Structure formats: C-alpha cells, structure tokens
Length: 230
Image (cartoon, rainbow, N blue to C red; front, side, top):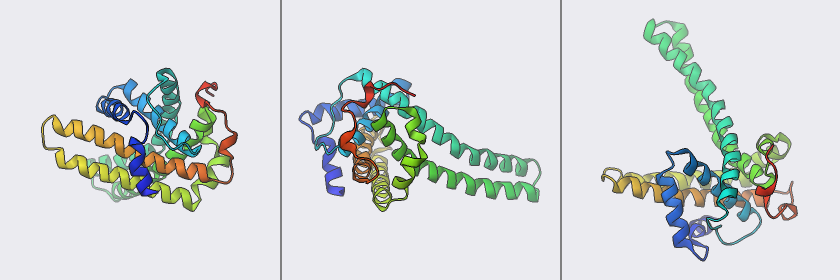
C-alpha cells in the first residue's frame, strides 16, 4: 500500500497540472474557499480509490468540488468541536491555577489535558472515515452514520490505513520543516509537500474504505456530488 500511495498523487495523465493546482490551493488555504476545495478534492480521492480507479482525479468540475468540500468541512468541523470539550476543561484548569494554585485547578488541568488529547485522537481517527462516507453518500448526515462507520473504524484494515496516512503527514511535516527557515521558499515547499502527503494519506484511507465488507462500493452512483446535501 505504501509504494502505491507514494506513486498515486502523480498517477493521472496531467499530474503536473494537478500537483501545481493542489500546491497553490494548499498555499492559499488560509482563505476559506481554497481550503474547502482542497477538502472536496481529498474526498474525491477517497471515492475514486475506493471504486478501484487507478489514477488520481483531476481538478475539474470546480462547482462539484466546492459542494463536496462544504459538506466535508462541516463534518470535519463538527468532529473538531468534540476535541474542544477537553480544551475548555484544560483552559479552565490553567486559569484556576493562574488565579489561585489550588488542588481543584491542578486536577482540572490534568483531566483537561488528558481529555483534550483523547478526544483529539478520537476525532482525528474518525474524521477520515466520516469524510469517506460523506463522499460516497453525498450527504452530511452520512458523516455521523454510526451503523456504517463503526464496523469500519474497528477494522484492522482501517486502523492500518490510518497509521499509514499519519505516517505520510508526519513525513511531509519533516520535509517541510527542513525548508521552514528559508523565507518564502519554506512556505511554498511546505504547501506542495503537504498537498502531496495529504493525497497519499487519503489514498490509504480510500483503499481501506473500498475494502470494507459492509458496503458494496460498486453499487454507488457514479457522481455522489449530484445528490442533495442533508
């Protein structure tokens, strides 16, 4: 899976254009629209890989990409808010200690830190699978479909794919960090490397999603973006 994932981002017929557009979108992802389009593209990657398509999707049908990205962004944001619960407790403990170093503040600080870490890890683990289901079903509600997601999340294939994906993201961060100290160049390299690593990571997720036994991906509609959002 790892070698295929590494090759995948440059597998389509116009890979230079795809990587160039993806890198530019990543570079400008501090803006809302490019970030949403990137999410839409990653969801399209998941769906195409799950269906057994060997080549990375091109940047086309921008309106469809944006619609998919909106749905995916809503779901990703919802899961990110889950981890915010721990953050609130952690900040509360920090403020309590700052005002008066009491045992209660210390306990809140420790519990909040552990809760923040645990919920962040859970959110990071669940989100790719949730995005995969949204990409397939074309509905925001699919991102919270426990009956569909649970068997996938507890499968060894998904756990392996998630770890591989995290490995790509971390490796991309290391490479980007090498150039981080170079003005301008560091940001540009980081954006392009980050896009490449992200596509490779979501290739792994797409493979796991396509391998699941609970849903026959071949029976899905050819264009999930045409379905109405929930």
